[in-house]
Length: 172
Image 1 (spheres, rainbow, N blue to C red):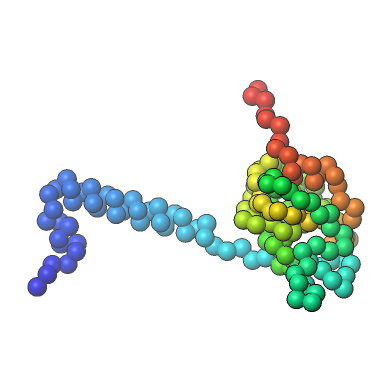
Image 2: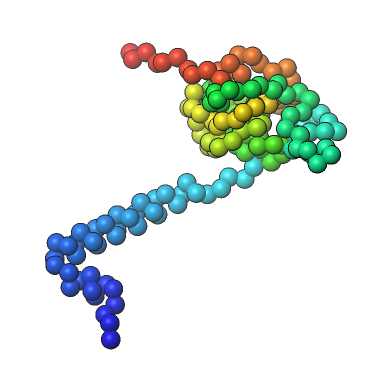
């Protein structure tokens, strides 16, 4: 009859047994502490004032629509997409690989980026990489008094901040 594993561990030389036990406990702690980050975030759904017949994520003649009216489309040429301010990145419920970016620095606005691969969801600092993509479709939305959102003219300053590395902070 074989012994249970925990009894066999106890028969190892004292220092080796303690090492094995310590490594096992350490691995368990790392595994358990990492589980909190694995919780999937629910995609954000918004009510958009304008409704287009064809929107990002739709299919036409079997082909995927990746941009829509109100979007500015950019070829990134390997550039990373960065957070324009400190804020929050959320997956969008609609659209082709879309994320929403919001920030308390511009609370009445929501920025939508579509075509994003490997999105970093959650809280981000200004300049943090939010994702990548070959082509990005950018839209600016403004909160309306009734709580819905309306597309407005995109801000070139926000778009520039999304594509450029932030200047280094001066140590004071």
